[in-house]
Length: 451
Image 1 (cartoon, helix red, strand yellow):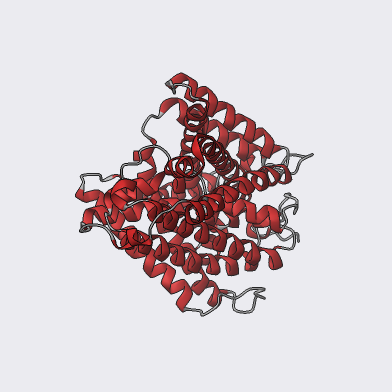
Image 2 (image 1 turned 90 degrees about the horizontal axis):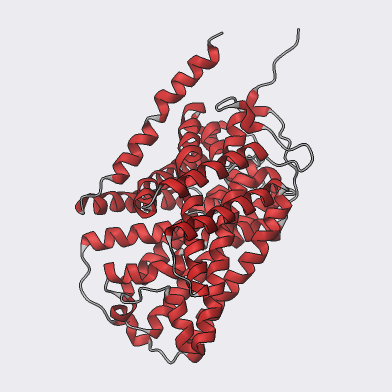
């Protein structure tokens, strides 16, 4: 009698070609996009207190590191393509994994890719001093998506190489801003104690902006199936990457506050980094930093296109989505079908949608709600897979993952409350769309069983 191989244990066809440098560049590159260069003035307008602003960046940086430490354990325990999807599947079953996957595949990933491509086009036109007409922005955005999709079809090593270059540029740019501000800026630490009263609604919306800027680091877990010696390297990639991200975020915000009072920061409508570098090094410095920002957004776009198709690839291998999405290229060993479909959906969104800010509000809550369950999987799998070897164990367990879960629950609740206060119910709609995945999964199973 021939026994069937359980679908979850299927080998995958992706090659392990990503090393420590490529993986670290990927986590830093995906997370640091346009946010740190754009959101500080918005946050300053919502929260007119430098100490509270620095507290938010530090608190959610610490919370993100706690989550990353738990994910490092899960990634070394289950070094498979799909990352969060795999953790949810093993901890809670196919239904929970499907709900995460279907929202990720259909909406959150193509929305993120489309939004980043549009921001890249707008920033590039700004750098070139050209007017940003809608048709021109769309053409540049589509060209970026098509170019990077093709690059990532050619191999994970090609995509990782693009990430390494772009990440080096953005890290250098942020380090230059930080050092330039403190060495040449002539600011004052007294700005830290300045500011007015903080309102609850503004604080909640500022939390959303900070969380959105930190969003993305989890995507590195999705390429665990292509990391060389993942049992050894995944923990280093995640920990080193998160320390770099949090250090740069806190350092950049401290530099902004050092150079200008919160009231002045709130008035910086253009990318604040350009304002800072123009003040320090003149127009040339401002133009150079703008070039670095354009490169940063391009790198974040590339990282999303590289990592996130691994979710539909893993779902297809488990029979939870159309099987053709599980195909790998015979020559380049990449999930080419998932990459092409993701790029195509993102292109449609660029052409059809106009208001990306509202759309991303829908799903930042859903993504971080999923992260609560993903990090919570460390508790479940400590029991379910107690005998499995763990190359890395979360330090200070269970307090570290608990801090992430509790902190994220507070943060997500604050976002929902703050949005409802201003009459925006999009987070509720996003959660409702996610919940709709459960009956869709049930229907999918029935269709799969039918002759």
